Image 1 (spheres, rainbow, N blue to C red):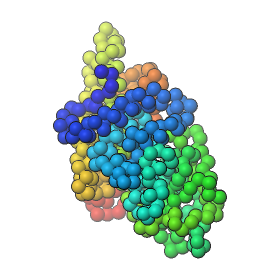
Image 2: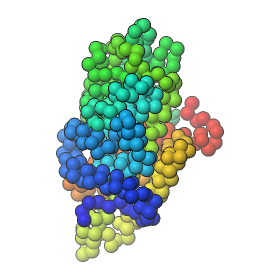
Image 3: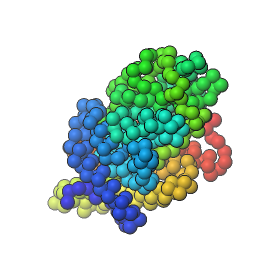
Image 4: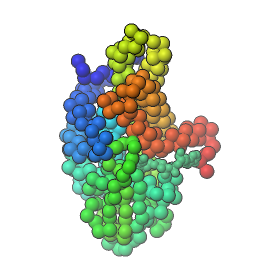
Length: 390
Ligand code: FAD
């Protein structure tokens, strides 16, 4: 059986339902069949494989926790986590596309949108007919989004949107953008911007060494007339974007671990096949240390994610817990990728294996959706009660 297996050192599969395992198997199968064979070339050429949008829609990877009446999966958070884990085992960029679509575009429209907005956008986003993007970060305001300058001005029937967003995943291919902008009172509002609106453009960001198979761009708004019915009516303030980020970060906690698992699996397999000094390199203590530490860290992170998933299902998880898990998985993945890459020697730097691609991808994953530092400060503030941000 060459379909990869999850490392399952602590028999975590016993904690999953049959449905969870079926969902994981279907996404795993998809990654094996449709992502792994093409993704290295896409990354090398810095091309976004557009066909995956429809494919992932059909598979149910977009908005798995959104109710079925709006085209979502109506599934629990463990299912969502397992989907993200399997997608990122393939590539962090592929998982990013799904995270943005489900947690950053569908979730705010579902949670804060009007019934008309839900009916208009959610089914098309769920099926992959439309691709969405999420605009929060600006050229001068990243970790501190409350200082954003993108703004809307009331003009009666419509608002006038001005400003720009940077580092926006999916932007060059998106039909729909959920954009966060300040109104005249200084309140942050969510606005649904559609491709084709006059004054709206999405220039592509070139030259990335990371997430090369994911399209990144800017969102530029030059006096864009946005009808008032495109404003999300049910949220004001930073809570809007932050609640979306909590959902997406939860998925990243599982996703980054998928990348770590792929690095571990690859290094383990290689260590049994590659012979030096008449022995498989896996028989040397130094290589065993790397593998033993990888599987230990992966196992700890799996348990953390599983517990977080059950708390999410019970609506008891806190954003600070999500921050801890996101930060932890990124660190585990970064270390696993670095160690696995060394274990493969020269082969480790080539596109013959996935490790170097994961390693470069994780550099984005550790930065977006709150940097590693910011998540540490969130934990620090949560346990001490002191805000060290400012
Ligand atoms: P800065 O905020 O300028 O941070 C620079 C450094 O300063 C970091 O190390 C940071 O940890 C540190 N720092 C900042 N504040 C503090 C502090 N108070 N104390 C200590 N250290 C601090 N954004 C979106 O809105 N939508 C997207 O779809 C999206 N996709 C992305 C895709 C990619 C590939 C990348 C790279 C980014 C993406 N982002 C997206 C943006 C991402 O969320 C930001 O890059 C991130 O939040 C950091 O902001 P910044 O780059 O401006 O860095």
